Length: 618
Image 1 (cartoon, rainbow, N blue to C red):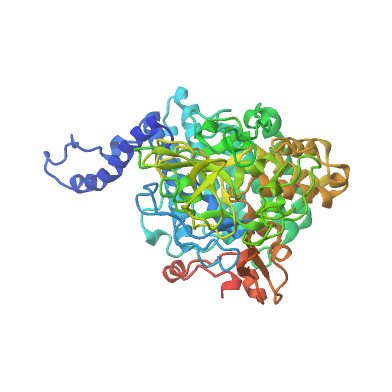
Image 2 (cartoon, rainbow, N blue to C red):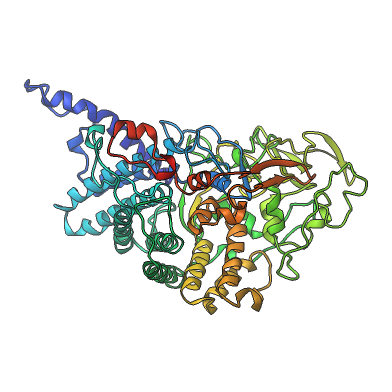
């Protein structure tokens, strides 16, 4: 589902899918009466005749591919700043289940947990192939006036297919590749894994075709245009460059090549540069920070908060999104359910900030980090007023505006929601759940959420207004934002030539939305310093959008974050000073290797003896 019109036409597609099985029964009959076209069912040969048919097929592909990307925030749990303690139940996004469920979103031990996701990704491949093959058949006899529209439909389907294969190689490396409709498992039961370089070339061809055939702007909100194809092509090249520069030893069929890395960085930079310069795209609300309310108030929130609400649907910053239908469509998003707690329509807070995220928000006065917060138990005398205490609200004054827009700490407020109605201001106080409290003479009830163990909850993605249930949201989830393109461009150019003036300017534009000053000369003095600044912005700007785990893997930075094998690992703590989880303690090299590459599902290998296994999983 992309728009309401697309929802209506998709229902016709589902009807077609149900009915085509009946067509073959009647086709084999010899009786003239039985050989007539059915009048109550849509025969397969009556479809794929017009551009409208092709469009309906495309909508079905979007409907199948969307649920493979629209909860990518779960992948943030593979990094160090977001805790994902589970996944919400499906809300109808997939009639056959939820691709994300049952996976492991911890910082370690996750590589064996994505067998289901692997299978669903290939479902997306087959659906896009179905569209591509049938529309190409239409193109062979189409009127010249219909050709551009049909080619654009093929371009969108190929973009979606490229996105799915890109995700597959990012996680599993070499994967089976097919570009035709698969009607039966026997057709692929002996297909071997295709070398990643070959799959990459096919993805590049898909993205390039899409760029050449798509309009500058998608026909409706949620449909892709040229900037999306360029941005994904650039991202693919950036990842290819990263793998060639940093190596991927767990994928034994891959040999890194420094020269190829440099070529790919340059190609990525060129694509990102076109996205930035050629289409008039701008950051949400001009990249201005907007107003910010006082501590403990939330009448006026920075613009960054609204970027993750339906207000931003269709905004120029949103290069590619997957849309949702909202109330009554059975195709809403789960963002409120996943990011907030019981005080907001009975939500479950599956996703929360870790304690360590707070220290990453810099000071607006200096543009640099504040002194580290000090965990303190609030029962300790003076803890609520001690300098730099993590439970002292004053410790959070003067930070990057994106902090107030993204997370809540003790005594920050949001609007409670119940039965689609507001219940008034709800103050968050860690480990004080659903309790009466008086603040400034006003009787309130504290935020009821036991889903965090850090002392913080997310404000980002909180749908903080009445009228929609926890799963009814209609926010267009971004899979490609202009801010990400800015940062990827800066990374690519920095790898080639070190800090460049235009790249520095783009990073500073992103910092400006947090009301931060420009980067100091020391932070752009050399390639290493500028990379650190870019990584900092990726952490803050893209938090909980699903990027961090993929960044750590392509940079081979897991050991940098969590320490070397057979060391003490790293504790995750909370604002009270309590240890919560310890990751990578006395961990072997093999466990790290299994974090860099995912397991080929054993069930797939049982059905197909030609599927080899990735080395760390042998």
